[in-house]
Image 1 (cartoon, helix red, strand yellow):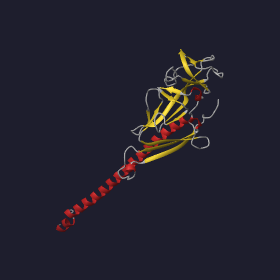
Image 2 (tube, helix red, strand yellow):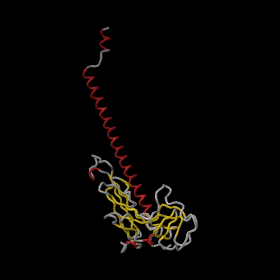
Image 3 (cartoon, rainbow, N blue to C red):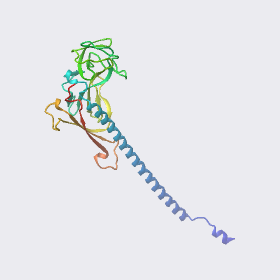
Image 4 (tube, rainbow, N blue to C red):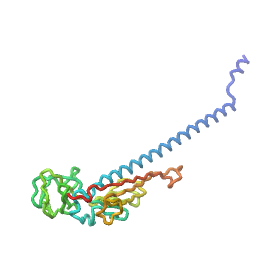
Length: 272
């Protein structure tokens, strides 16, 4: 019986301590692995958010900048909106250095009745979102059919009186566009702003923008002598992650991405 008891004795204190140490090492290793994976996931999530942020912003800029001049905007230059005067379809460094303002037709209604010589009746004075398209203030510039533009001198009901006589025939259903002045710039907080210059101020397109630059080329790929000669706008947009990575030793711990896009202005230099 004594022999059987000796064979079934429990673990010693030393064995228990060794087991605890081994368990602690294993737990620490698992925890370290978990923390490492969590950091990797967080960094990847930050990078993905940053990439989506900058791509969405530059895609919208490309869409709007590409149609600069649409509506034969040059017929009503210079354009004054909200007290700001824009002399060209593309206005570099306007309203501030490093920004750009482009003019184009956008947001449309349609011709409701055969136009008179200098009058056009439209189906609505607002777009599909309920935004005002025309008035005799900051929204007084209009493009008929995208081929000729005028200043609205009076509005009676849905009838627009124009500053000149229509050149072309515009049947019922022809699109009628409001002419917009859209500005892009980055503020001191690193927010990319889009401003339609109608009093609402700049609206945020993207956050955490480190740099925004515009370059301008003429049809031959050279710097233009005049703004009217601009045919390509090169946009460089650099963004960073929202939070720094303590283990990333470059750029203060912020990971960044830069996108460069050359936007060809398809409406510049064209005659209707």
